Each structure stands twice: as structure tokens, then as C-alpha cells.
Image 1 (tube, rainbow, N blue to C red):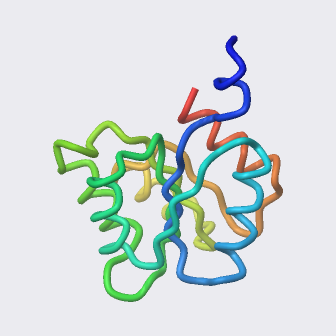
Image 2 (tube, rainbow, N blue to C red):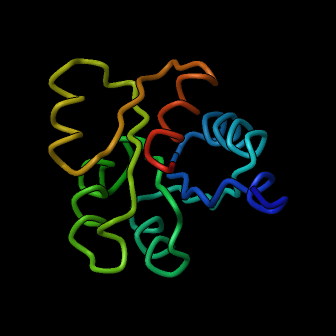
Length: 128
């Protein structure tokens, strides 16, 4: 494995409207070698996803305007982003929420509060 590959794991688009959560998740990702693109709304995330082509998207569900579920559907419908894996990271922790998230196109679902290990396991499962 060349040096660059070991130090750089890929780019993650992080969609989170809570500053403390954004900070925590960004920290975990950067610590693990990922580059982070931040978006606070689903609309902003859509534009950034098409423009910057991240390796994966981590999104909250409950956000102003468009929900994370709607964002999943929009990303999967767009030809530039249809293959980008999505991790939903939400406090909605019922089985029905998880099933609905997967039905909307999510590849993994992590419930808050989560550990660094749970988050990174989900990210690695969709990016490797």
C-alpha cells in the first residue's frame, strides 16, 4: 500500500445541523484519515455532493427544510451521486426508522449517541 493511501482514507460529506455533533463527527473522521466536507442543510449537501463527488455521505435525519431521508432519495436519483454510499446518523433509533432509512437508499444506519468505533465501523463498511 503506498504512503498516500495509508494517510488518506477518502472524502466524507458530513450533513449535520447541530454544531457540536458536526464538530465531534468531523474530529472522529479526520482522526481516522478522512477529509471532511461540511454541510448544514440537505440542500447544501446535494449541491456539494454533485460538485465535489465525496466517497461517502454521513447525514442526520432531522434537519430544517429537507430531511436526511429526502436527501438519500435525491442523492440516489442523481446520476452524479447515485453510487455514493450513505450512512444515516440519527437519534431516531426505532427499527422502523432504520428500515425506512435503508429503503430510502442508506447503506448503513448509526444511532446517536454512538461511539467512535460504531461510527468508524459504519463508514468503513460503506467505503472499503
